[in-house]
Length: 309
Length: 325
Image 1 (cartoon, rainbow over the protein chains, first blue to last red):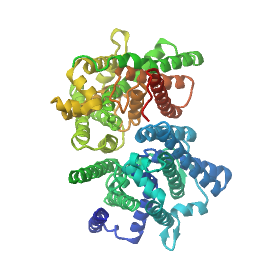
Image 2 (cartoon, chains in turn red, green):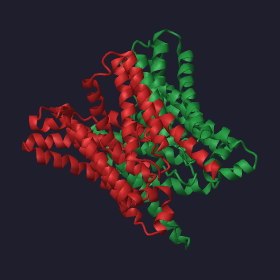
Image 3 (cartoon, rainbow over the protein chains, first blue to last red):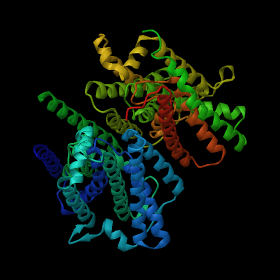
């Protein structure tokens, strides 16, 4: 709980700094915009959080968003059916997760290598599939999901809230959730105490893929267009959000609410840079530094905990 | 300490990847007209040379149970610096020194993060990837650096003894790495870092220093590779090499170096690099789009890993043992 408090303080400090340095930061429109951006990052990062909780990793989430969005867009355009498009996006996302899971549990590949190979494979397939095309202009009903408002609040924020609550219950109060933490904390001990480790890992990667598919749908509705490269800039921020949120790369410790705090922090930084008119080219640099600092904190926390034992 | 550790591995391991390469060459030679020509073979060599410069140090890094995802972003940044120095007429030697210097700085930074601070290599170098890519974009505003003069293009296009310049550089780098790994103390220590670090430390070796040097070498080699990349394009571009670190990791894995056993095979890496070169070139000759080529490398890695684990299982059965689960 203390770590969550630190993170909220960090968010508050950035908020105060931006309020003082810019005129527009503390306006309802901008704050809602920050929340909407953060909700997209959170959706991608939430499945990723589960994989990291099991001491794994899913580097393919960004590329998965790219392929899922492009396929969903194509299906939606060619069939004129929102439902089929959404099903295609979610289905492809989950299917990628199935393959990731099998590579890790069946072929026993290290998760970062399996999902890293998947990243480039998906990128290649997406570019080939799109052939440089852009698909844009979707029905207003569908676009509501990304850019609409309900009671004055952007719709993606409701989606995020729903998954935050559902995910929170899932990880904290169900056997599945406890098993996820147990696998990450000590895989061998989990196996010996009867956790079906392989089946749970498979499910975790499928969930990560499906969440990438869902994020792709919301992203598509927000952008109103799909291109082969839309997923590429999303991987690093998603990993940054999870790590800033205090989920340990070594597995077994962390939470979805932490990931939300991480997504908010990161979005505030990017929003602040935009408001202060900082060149967008700085963003990968800043995100990279944040990732390094967050991992460093994770490692130090762990070393201190081990020193205490 | 002067003989290669378990030298037999080189001899036994290389054929696995080599068979794959041979099959690919035969298939492409039959189905792609223009594949088996001297010009095209040299072309494959030239295209593979930049990748080999990255894959050689990547082999050492993976042997030490690490990973460097920042290599291609560092290569792009070094290329931008090299091109900028040439554009401002600082001369090729100074420009090359600056490029290698930038690479070395990132390599040392990676080494400090991984070795001294103990960060997991794949996320630490993902962070430095972002930093290097961001720096390259900020320095150039996302534009190519052109007007690099005639010296570098002339050197790049030269053909001493009929072989393209980049093939000479790649060959020289391979021989130096091979010699270093098998004949020097540093090479022996590097082999031990991934396999038996504890023994190294107990023997009084400063394992951390050698471990850090492996990452520093990776950065410096990315800087050197900028010479060939910039020469080929006659310009520096901030995202020129994006994704090449995956090809380098793929080449190392296809070549039979393992993440878990601390065993590196430079000969295997060379074959891995050539396999990737042949796949890309062959698919080009067959007029298959470059984006599917990217996907095919991913599949190639998985096939190589599956073959690897099957061979291990067979080997274990022959020796009358079963693999630990």
